[in-house]
Length: 151
Image (cartoon, rainbow, N blue to C red; front, side, top):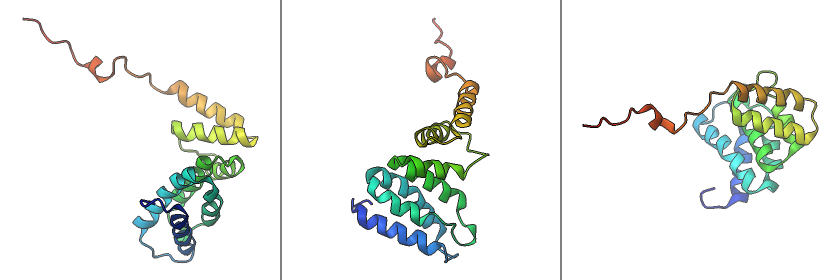
């Protein structure tokens, strides 16, 4: 990835993900970094996304890094603009989805683009999060700093 050899990088990621389906003893830190690298790779090269998604379609051995694998699948599909695949990946989080603004926005966009029946509940979830989100401080942190005393 660092050398921008994206086809080769995708091949290595796919091989690592597929091997981890049967090998329960990989270096978890390496697989975790690989999972984080996959969505930006798909964003840069959407044509590689289907291979990456296929390699993550089945759980890893012993259920290793299952949440991270689901997040990577969602990120790959969303980054590559694959609405149907993104909606399918988002389904893995239902009904207890991550209550984070970015996730809820992407989830809604995927469901809406795919015409998924969960688009309306996703819209309500995002509206609820936004309604309950604290308002930003006016003037930032400096608003908390008292003015300097005048002599």
